[in-house]
Length: 560
Image (cartoon, rainbow, N blue to C red; front, side, top):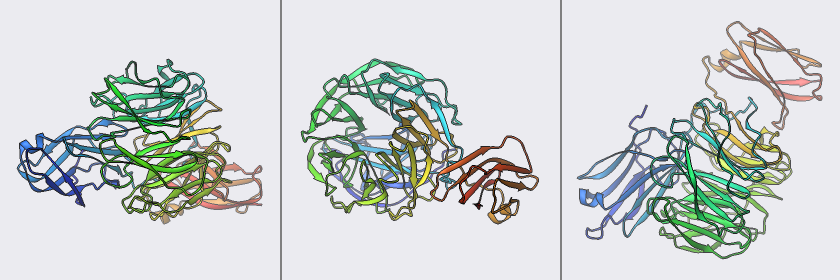
């Protein structure tokens, strides 16, 4: 249910509402730019230093859009007052990036924030790998959005060897239907993205294919039926990475791409709801690869984060799609496979994350003045050999942004808990069964309010997801711990788990001290004593996790 929830945070910018009327100052906006942990039922408001008349309001284009849901509709109230309030018709999705564009003839502003996930998010993934498909040959990219307008998040894939862009309908509980092909009329499909390019309220699909240098899009009718291919460009030489954002602040979404062959970064201006595009060269520097778009200096313009000749850096946007020179973030030459940005230390600025092939996963603190701190390793290359991708979302429901990594050489997806200040815990393994994993994404796939994880892996042609569990208990922790016992402990060949009547065990998982899952067993029958074969486990100390209908239980187990 949509509830009114109004935040109030100071925020100073200047917005010229009309060329014929004096400029108004924005004295507060809520949520703030790049805010995190914003309630999903939040309203949006902008407060000015003078009363807003209908003439002034009509001179402003305001577009609210979600990264997983497209254009967001709602009601504006507050004319003849100093505050404009936007009340969305529906709640936002948990963990969704929401963007608000305010545009006049002289001023462009794009403000973004990330919504909260459930506080019951456990950050545990004991249900293992859920395969969506193994029919995406050399799968490279996975994405999630509501493609059929039914309120849940579906999945998209791009796969290189079969030249395929496809999607998979979600029933709302994380059960996915058969593969539905959007197109095979591309050559080497490296990238797929979903965004509302024509501003009609549904999520269209964008593809990038390296073999034919093509970026194209496919119009959605709102029910998951996609139109024919509409070409944005066929001059994106060996394109492999794209990003979609409103680069010129005019209320529609543009496309940014990197070219492996020329080393250029291009952006394509959306002129009229996707019907025509203008190609612009953002930079001619050589060696561009990974790319991400976000506002790095909190000035309301969407900047471009990119790699160039092995360096992490960024290009400042003045809000109108005019970009400055490359500003280096990293101080050394690195092999950069993936980039992302999120506020990792809670100071209101987007920090930079990098997946580094030979170094591991690192982050760079945004100092707030256009400069960045030195490289801080989250995990070393020994634990993430060939780190291919990196992502950030709140996995444990504590209100800060945790980090996800994908490392191709050990087929691993893992995460790292953030204490809220940019200090990260030990690697927690989600899976080692994504053979040559290339890409990861996070979204609430089963509708329980937390961020689940998606992976695309090339050697096994697989798109898969991993359920994030809930910590909701119907008993207090100490009461629940009295409801079960583990014996013998230490053990040799068998461990017994006994529960009292009324407690139903659903699954048992055993982890070594590095967090690696070594044994898992689903429990189908309602048994009071469950016997687990531990004979093949090496002598060591383990954590045994028991998932029940009333919560998750853990104990230490010693194998002799």
